[in-house]
Length: 304
Image (cartoon, rainbow, N blue to C red; front, side, top):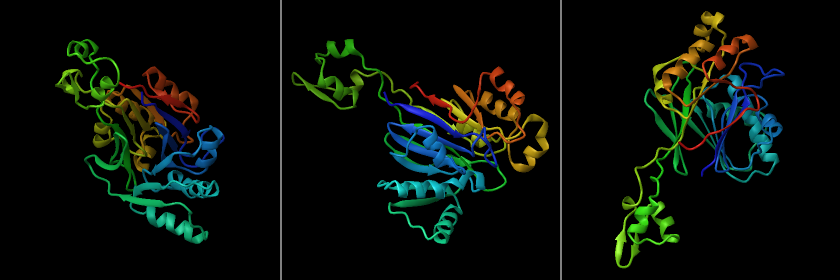
């Protein structure tokens, strides 16, 4: 089984506080690490929660507001001090390249490992920006006050369930030939060719993880979240701050809950809580069967 875990590194918005760090989420799949948003102090929180940096492949930034990007220079410099050898990619809307180049030039810093910066054009239909081992990462335009994108990690389909009795009926002995068929390879048995379709059930879908970043409730992010195994949506404002939420391009708690309900996601998580959000404001989240994220929360995502 391919293990996939979400780690909520920072679940606040704006300036970090004693209770909540700046926005950041780490996804670990088969030992490969991916960071979504990288607010101030992210590298410290990664160490605090014992997650480590080995296997870090990419950082995906939703937009260029400071609380989502100020941790990237510190993270890159920490990796450099740790003699990081692997290449690292940083994805984000237009301006991310100029931001990092300006910081590194001003601080006379040059990483000793390959740092690749990729600028994303927000689109209303999902766009693949990263391809990994049997999964893709897609983006879609979010509705914020600056160019912003939501992300989805979508695994490829898995082979169907192996039908043991059917394999034995066809004369395929238990052992290496079964493994080959499960990997989609045809095998030879007593001069006959046995194809995977003869012993495998219908293909099974992979997992889908969706991360909204900062956004007003919007159709394209909702559509990306349809049927997600985990849908993480921002809820920066309490319900009594609707005017401020609209002006700032954010969602209120109840608005985020409504998006999660409409999506039909298996697990819905609210995060990115602003400093106006009080503990009593979050009681409604559990009542609807969703989770209010906190720094250090980890979620294992089982296969469907």
